[in-house]
Length: 261
Image 1 (cartoon, rainbow, N blue to C red):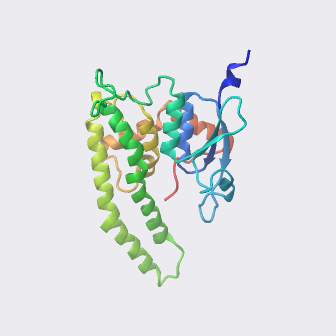
Image 2: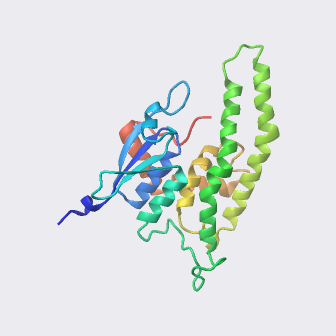
Image 3: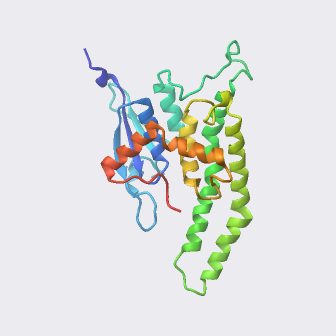
């Protein structure tokens, strides 16, 4: 009789330092799935992913996973954080609360019959990258412009451009997002401490990267947004999150939660 381990699919995560791939590692730890990890490092000068990642996926970005079904030699390659999380939850959630119940009792299959937890879950799976990450990336670019090595007589120009981007665009955009998230936490279903309710979900995991990136930066402070600040700290204290961080420390010697700004 084949062993249980032999019947399980083989999951491999292609992990890149200071990237969104950490949240996939966290999910794998939460689901207690066996997996293989391949570590990649950014170019020290450009901060870009190494070209070797293009051998896994044409865009050469991370996260990417491959899943090889039992008894097969061909693997499925999946990229993009939300898609990876949805795929893993669909196949391996095993009754966990990481994916909320879709329908209210008696409303199965009906339009509008979804639970608030489920609607929030689906929304944040897309909001994290579709709305919140864009200004954070622009903030990174603005910071790079401001701190770039240029002749002293050019410095006022680059510094001025970066400051205008920050004050005229980024500051009001971040205020809008963080105020919204603060209110979402205040109205979480069942007085929960997570975005979708009282239990950690895959949406919290996908949201962890932009929230932790923004913590202490981009105007996200404990004084202005106490609930959102506490939420970020709560995510970093989750056992699965800490196991994933420790895994990287054991393999790579250090762990940094996000890219440097």
